[in-house]
Length: 200
Image (tube, rainbow, N blue to C red):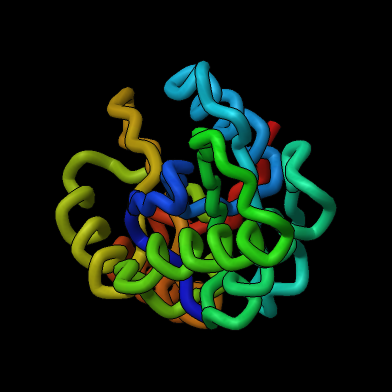
């Protein structure tokens, strides 16, 4: 499975109805509702804001909403496109402005299918890699060599705090955690220990 690395937007018009589609990288279903609300605030006069999302390393966690379009004519076709895309951790939202002409169930399915296909057609993506969240405290004199090790092991830094020592939180590929920990321990002569992060 692959995950999107950017947000994308596309637009089509069918019988004067405008369909504006947006795609977002997400990591949790909790992100869906705030993004739906955000689009309603951007498009207060829209007729519908339909969504579909897929999550997880096997793409087996998903959801959708027709947002008062006829049942299974909006969210369902969008979700089916996502299921067949090889992408995961992605949310697609489709804003519809009604143009005055009813499209019928077949027309709606086609419109929402096309909208989803367009917004993910050339989306930049990368292979989904399971990552372990880590935490460490680094003396200032070791910051540069430890930071270099983290970069060499494809870690991404989420937060750095400069106090008596430098506190670093980040993520490292799961299968590289042990080797990263060992190298940091060796390079720092036991002064720095890479630990798994446990939130308060």
